[in-house]
Image 1: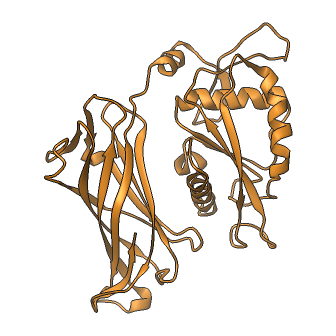
Image 2: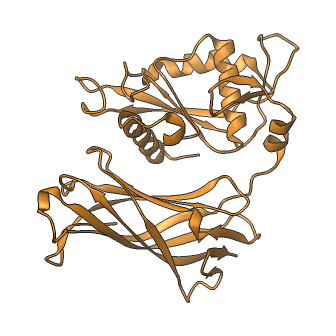
Length: 320
């Protein structure tokens, strides 16, 4: 289960993406937003089970108190227990494990005075989830959520095959080191420049099984973001270098071959247009690696804090 800090980070990233005009499915394919607690109970239970089944073991995030633009009336965490209690009778055998967290919003993300939303975390590792239309009904259904349309329907054979096929266990990733530097553009004034940036770091792999895992390098994604200032940037290139002290992690020209615990060195670079850099604020770095044969990415994230620049051409610097 996601720790509270990661859950809050995911919720804030989703709110920022919605406020910037991105579609929900693009911002977070396994998230949903609601202006209030979903009701009535039978319909809410069916949608919850459908979303959990379609996620196929990946965590689902519901944000309560949020509109399509990332803003809304806010949510009341005190109503969570009563709301959940109304859903449980409609599940057959086992409901997903559900927890909730209050996420405060800054005035820039909500209306003044600052409000909060409720982040509902749904752990779906014990799929499938089966529901009944009435609390005492003998009719059972495996519901499914169509991600593109948002419609809930009964799962067909294809969805059941997907649902019951075990997902490859993704390894745990940990960022051990991260040094981020933004460089000034010598052909433009500082306030109107396109900043070039680089990040040097180290990444540690902890696999969950003994099978070899292959990460094609073209399936690597890396992003920078600021939680309170709306800053965002995407890496154009990500490169990896083998660590000779980690023989269980090997690199080829096109892939990372993971056979056990180990470390690799990472180098990411990109550029961004920004009127100014958030020099007094922390920045988050998120790295996603999608293994061959899997549709579930292994993710690592860390927060970097402002650091002293060391060269005259550096516009800003952050370190883990």
